[in-house]
Length: 250
Image (tube, rainbow, N blue to C red; front, side):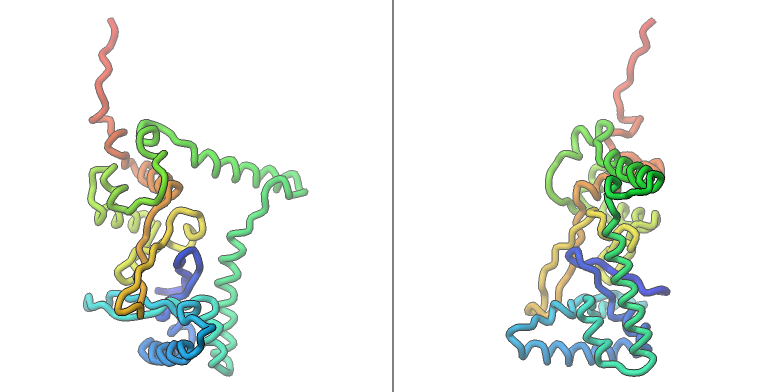
């Protein structure tokens, strides 16, 4: 991890505690110790939920061992910042505020009809049109598959391509769509907030931690289709060698 990067959990941005530790110049194990203490303090209040601040998660270290970490919401970052003083506290506050504000700004593009400048209005209209056309089903694959409602696991989508979930996840990583966060795949920031995925958490260790299961929406499935097609990878139903031959008419 080079630059701090927001993750999306249940549609909301958060920072990995390892990122926060680097930002504030503290060993991760020491930050974890502090967070455990904060959680213990928060649990004494019936009006406050620790999960509004710190979300239990985990990651695989260089040795392949599973380690605990936390996802810090904006409130969690504020909590940590309020415990700090001096230059480090000021710099951390500036960094996390900028990250969260940039994320919110990315979700608030104006509709074309609200823009007065004719050139900018036309540019925005083109963006909207492209976004609309990107959702229009195309080809045999969409006719038979893309109208299914609900979310899908990567395993279900991978079957459409005759491959395993492991292979599809690896391809999406190679194509710059997602990266591994502990045991879980997480979208890179530029794809966050676009409605491609949903995270379905489930608790473990007596509700002391939460795993994040990534599922793809139909819009996300369309995005996967376009991404793979751009690299010459088609679903089984569209692979030329599997399509019926058309006899020429003399």
